[in-house]
Image 1 (cartoon, rainbow, N blue to C red):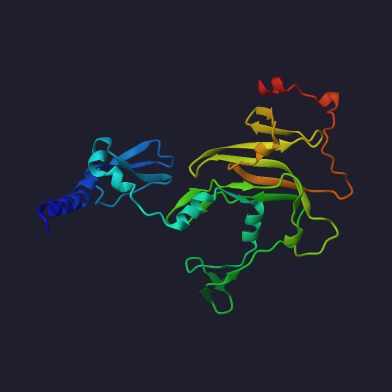
Image 2 (cartoon, one colour):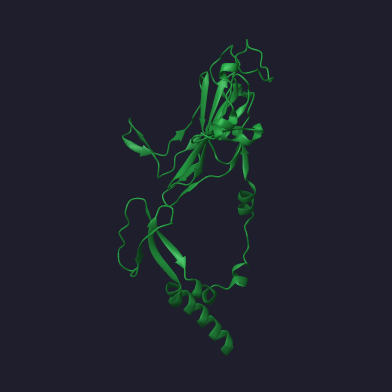
Length: 266
């Protein structure tokens, strides 16, 4: 082996083993990572972390270029499965429903206790929709949990604003068509440590949509704006088969007419 090759290997080993801890800081922070509670000087000793506190690892800017080779760090092979995940930024509400009713085998970490054999087993679980109510509330799973990681799911779920047909998902027989129309959406902004809620609601008299953000209310010009990655809870109402579904706006009675500019300035 050439001498310069030996020196290069030794240098890379030194960087990995000896210099890495000199180039980073370990800190205990709040859940959002915005407030440092304590800097950790000795990471070899047991670390006590409080509720809603996290250990963060931060690069020292002055050491970063000494440790990280930007050119080599970009020379990686991306597996095709990773590309598929990155491309899937949207999905439909029907994709969610299909997944909801798909049989699932419980993992060894989440077994079912059998009352007959008195032991835990990897059972099969199956969810079905037997009967639906007049008011249907759909709670999208926006937070992912496992033993090692928690994260928010920001995939855009495309959901029908009108004519959500759930007939094929309902097991019980009914003469009432299982067709629903959206009338409200609850949005969540932020992450696991904190966030903010807003809402979209439809005026049943005029069919206009409005956005509610604390005390601020504004009219929605494009109804498709209610479909976003922040949509968290969807509120649907079953369509009355005896009622004509009219998309035209109905004038608001004069006593109900509120000036939007006055409302926004409150």
